Image (cartoon, rainbow, N blue to C red; front, side, top):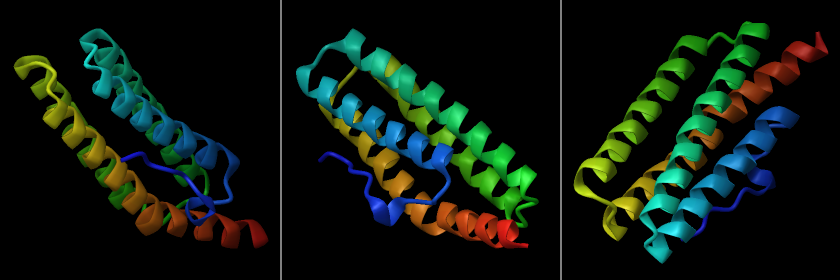
Length: 135
């Protein structure tokens, strides 16, 4: 199942929206290469997803600090939990070998989390930024 970014996920923050789109593309790329069964391509795609997630979370947290986002600490904890989950699944892939089931689980976990996080957390952040900018 491919993941698609659409306007319902738009925060109105150009950098955040662009990075969210890149994360969806990275998840979909991982799904694509896992279907081909090429272990090295899967690892390369997974490394990109891990690294880009870290970059995105850093950038997003800097924006939260800039706007004195009141839910910053909780938001950061959610990011840390997600990074740990992806790291654990990545280690399982390395230890147990690449399997379609594990790769699918990783993609589903990442994709479902990303959609839920944007709708449940990032849109609240966007509303806070918009309200702060109006002052």
